[in-house]
Length: 136
Image 1 (cartoon, rainbow, N blue to C red):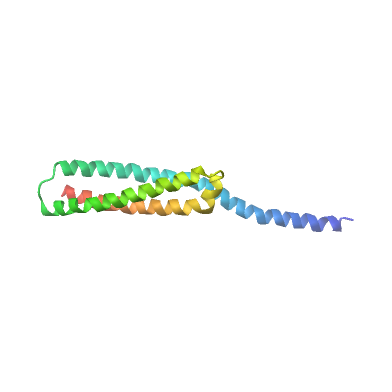
Image 2 (cartoon, helix red, strand yellow):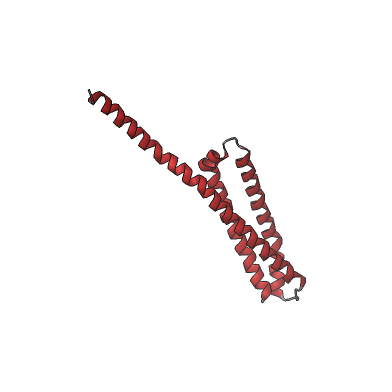
């Protein structure tokens, strides 16, 4: 009598086991969103500090050729950074407008946001190089 019950119980246990993997990945990605957002916040905070420092250096610029050359490259860097920030803002708006934002985050939003965060980090490095050049 136990045999007809054991098979379905084992099948159900196996189905549950198969479901736990995707659920764990979903939960991990959802909790990762908090880490990613904190990392982006740190990038933006440090980028703001770097831009304030560059602003200070531009106000005290001596007409050194290297500093002038660096200053001439800033508009393109600023344009690229603004583009990334606009994309990041639009992506986050899109994610949070969804009824199931956490599912959307886990499915596709995370990769887009992380890619934009990487772009932001790269652009921050460009500003750091400029800032170091102005400090010379």
